[in-house]
Structures are given as C-alpha cells and as structure tokens.
Image (tube, rainbow, N blue to C red):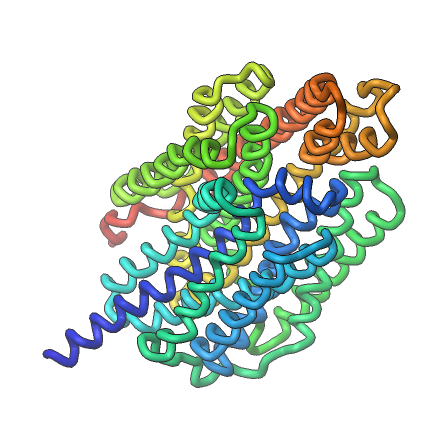
Length: 510
C-alpha cells in the first residue's frame, strides 16, 4: 500500500516536471509576438526574414514531430527527452544572443528540432506513468491545458520580460527549466519504450521534411513577391514528395504515420478542426500583439496585461466544453466553438477598421470572444483524435494530432502574416512622402516595426507613423476577415462530419 502511494506521488511529481517542457515548447510558437517590434529595430530583418524568425520554429517541429516520436519508441522516450532538453536549452542561449537575422533564424530552427522532441516524448511518458484510466485522463487533461495554453501565455510572458530586459530574455527563460528536467527527470520519470517498435525508416523521415518545407517556402514567397516560377516549383515539388510519403506509409508494416486513420470520420474532422483553429489563432495572435504595441502605442507590460482576459476566455471555453460534451453531441460543441471563434475574428476585424482610434477594451473584448471559441474546440478535438481512433493506434493518433496543431500554428503565422505584409506593402508603397531618405523609405516599406524604428530618425516622425499605422491596419483587418471566413466554412464542415459521434455519457447502442 505504501509502495503504491509512493509510486503515485512520484508519478504526479513526474507529471509536474513533464508539463513544464510541454508548456515551453508551445510557448515558443508565440513568445516572440511581443518582441517582434524590438528585434525588428535591433536586427533590422526584412519582412520575409521576420516571418521566418517567427514560424521556422513551428515548421521544423511539424516536420520532425513524427520522426522524433518514432525514434523515442526505439531508443527510449526518457532518453530522447533528456537529449532534446539539452538541445533546446543550448539553442535558447544561441537565440538569445543572436546578432543577425540569419543567426536568429538558425537558432529558431534548432529550437524547433528540440521542441519536436519535447511534445511527443512527454505525452508518451505520461501514458506509461498512469496505467489507471481515470488518472491518465486527468494527467493528459493537465498536459493538454499546458500545451494548448502555452500559445496564449507566450505573448504575456514575453511582454513582462520585455518590460525589464532585452528581447533575447524571452529565450533565456527556457534554460532553467531544461536544467531542472535534466537533473530531476532521471529520478522522477521512468524510462519507457516500445518493446516491438519495428524498424525506424530514415527515408520516411526525409520524405516528411521534403514534403513540408518546400510547400511552406513556396506559399511564403508567392504571397510576399507574387507567384513566380520558383515558388510554384517549390509547391509542386513538396506535393510530389507528400505523395511519395503517403504511398510509402501505406506499404510499410510499421509506418511513421498510419494514413488509414484519416478514413475515420471522427478522427479526420477533429484533426481538421484542431489544425484550422490553431492556424487562425496563431496567425492573428502574431498580428494582434503588433497592433496593440505599434498602432495603439501600448508598452509591452501593459499589452501583456491586456492579454490576460484572452487566457481567461480560453479557460472558460475549455471548462464549458468539458461539461457540455457529456450530454451534447461533440459535433454541436466543436461546431459551435468554431462558429464562436469565427465571430470573434470578424469582431476583431471590425474593431480594427477603426485603426488608431480603436479602444483597447473593444479590441481585447473582441479577441476574448475569439479565444473563448478556440477554448471550446482545442481540448475536445485532441480528445476526439485519440478516442475515435482504434485503441491500438492511440499513440499514432496523438502524434498526428500534435503534428496538425504545430503545423497549423506555423502555417497560420506564415499565411496570415504574409497576407497582412502584402497588404501593408501595397498600401504604403507610393503613400510615403517623396522627400524621405531612401534608407528610411526602404525600412518603412518592409515591416511596421521597421517603419517605427526608421521614423525615429526623422525630425517629424508623425507622417510616416500615421501612414505606416494605417497600412498595417488594412493588413490586420484583411487577415482577420480571411480567418473569419475560413472558420465559418470549417464550422459547417466539422459539424456535419462529427454528427455521428455520440456524447461521452450517452448509453451504448443495444
């Protein structure tokens, strides 16, 4: 009895250790949102470089997630987790002290590889640490809350740090947590591996990267510089590798991704809902923080405080969905949450149209409606991804779900950020005073952060700041409208696809 109590206490302490790296891995998708204006002024990246700084982390997580999950099955999940913690901590130091945009992009890429280890390893270890169904559901719920909440918490933590320190401090917070994991992980977290994992397929890992990265590059370049030969070839090449990857998974006895899971209506719809909701939320979060700081003129600390209601909105949405799904069809809950999120995006766009005259309260009230809707969708979608798959495929289903979330977040920042940047450039080109120095004009047409930094060099910065602010607002509202449209369509599709899935407490059919 005492031994069982000690094992249970050790498991819950181990959960606390595992939740922290999962939280940090998702926080790093959004922690730079507050720092974007500051690093823009310091490193002077181009608009495309700034987008790569923001989203290369999420893209490499998405590309390596399945690979790292499969590798952990073979060499041991705790061992791989500790290796990833060391890599994540080292890359964090490199990012904090980056002196050029290229160096920061490379550091963020290394962080992405390390983050691809943290997420699947922690979830897989939690499964083995809690054999009882009830305890495991609670533990996975806590992990899900930390992993999904990290994206919302990231800008707040970033804003608080920027109030006292330089932009690189948003990376250094990772270091003590990784050191803690390296010290106590071997004591509190038991080793776990698949006793019959099958052969690790290196070719599948390479094909997955070859499918993801060219498509991302092509979409970004086409949106930023118009569709040309190079972006079109990149997208076609990535799609070709994706076809090869899928065909190989269907032939392998031990595939990295079980493509057949997508045939399940519940699994496919939940995966799609999660990916779309994260795509829209991450993309708008990146733009909303810049709107607060650079258009409305809020200091990082004040902007971070205004983000707190959005976290509360997410928490309330999670709680309401957890209660409703016991007696209400998941289709209704997920569909309603997606529709509420779409309404939130539309409200954000409407408030944003007021531009520099917008009320901070109005902007954040609209944004809280958005996060309330996403809170209703995200945890329930993750649960559906796992429970609608066959029990023997639950681990693969969870890995695919994490990949969808990470890929959706990265694509959201890229697509919505690129759309906003394209509109910004179109609006500001030709609107700037002709007498501006060439270097100031060039900086102002790249990003809003660059325009703010360049305007400080002028005797009268107001005209440049006004023109740049209005151009950014046009891009911001366009991106919000696009996100609202996308989620409105998703709400209808998801509701229809999930309609046959019964409530959690519904009696089994006779």
